[in-house]
Length: 333
Ligand code: NAD
Ligand code: DAU
Image (spheres, helix red, strand yellow):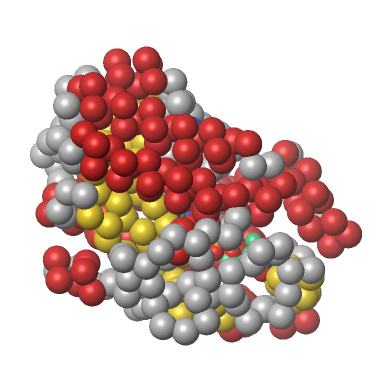
C-alpha cells in the first residue's frame, strides 16, 4: 500500500509515520506537510526515514500540487490541520483555510484520482461539551470554538462527498492525545516544561474541566485499524477511557517532577471552554481495538521524555512562541 500522510511532521502525524514504519514495512509513505510553526523539521530532515519514505513540503490547500503528489497513492490519511484551540480564538483564519478548505481540496483529489481510501483525522471536540454520559458516533455536532467548528466543517464536507460521490471516506474522532513530540503549547508538554523551569502553570478557570487522555501510540494503532478494516462512510470514536480534571492532571505532573503545587496559577478561563469530553468507543472496540498503554505509566514516560529531550523542546519555546505566550497569558509571561 502506498499512503499519503498529510501533516506527518506534526505530533500525531510523525508518531503515525513511525508506527507504520515499524508495523507495516510493506507500505510506502509520502509525508506531505506545510511545515507550519507546529511542525517538526528535524523529523522530516532525518535520514532514518528509509527507502519507502518520501517527504514533500506542501500545503494541502494547493489542490493542483497535491494532485501531482498524490498520483499513484492508495490511501490518504489527513492529519494536516491547525490544532490549538487558544490560537483559534486569537487568529481563526488559518483554521478555516486549512481545516475546512484544505479538507475539501484533499477530497477533490481523492475524487479526481479515484483514491481507494480517505481517512479524515478528526476530534471529539466536534461534539461539544457534556456534563454526563458519553458521545456516540451518532451524537449531534455542537462545536464551541473556531478550531472545533472548522474540524466539524471538514467532517461534514467528507460526508457530503461520501453521500454525493460515494467517496471512500472514514472519519476518526479521538480524545486528547499525549506523548513524545507534542508541541509545548498543549497543556501536558506546556506544564511539564514550565515546571522544569520553575515557571508558573497557568490553569484555566477553576481547573475542574475534564479531558479523556489517550496515549498517542494507542491513537496511531486505532487509526491504522480504521484505515485497513474500517467501513467506508463511518465515524469511529477513539477514547483513552481515562478522564481526569485538569487540576488532578496538573498535580500528577508536578508530583512526577518532584515540583511544588505552589507553581499552579489559576488564570482567566478560556472563552467557550468545554467542560467535559467523553466518548463511547464501542464501535471501535468491536473492530478489536483497546488502548494498551496504562495512563499513569504513559504519563510518567512522557514526563521522562521531556526531561530527556530538553534540546527538542527548548528552541520550540523560544522566539515566536514567546510572543504567542505573552499574548495568550499576559502578565504571567
Ligand atoms: P500538530 O499541530 O502537532 O501538527 C499539525 C501538522 O499539520 C503540522 O506538522 C503542520 O505543519 C501541518 N499543517 C498545518 N497546516 C497545513 C497545511 N495547510 N498543509 C499541510 N500541512 C499542514 O497537530 P496534532 O496534534 O498532531 O493533530 C493532528 C490531527 O489530529 C489534527 O487533524 C487534529 O485536529 C487531530 N486531533 C488531535 C488531537 C490531539 O490531542 N492532539 C486529538 C484529536 C484529533
Ligand atoms: O479533545 C481533542 C483535542 O484536544 C484536539 O482536537 C486538539 O487539537 C487538542 O489541542 C486538544 O484540545 P484541548 O483544548 O482539550 O487541549 P489543550 O492541551 O489546549 O487543553 C487541555 C485542557 O487544559 C483544556 O481543558 C484547557 C486546559 N488548559 C490548557 C492550556 C494550554 C489550561 O488549563 N491551561 C493551559 O495553559
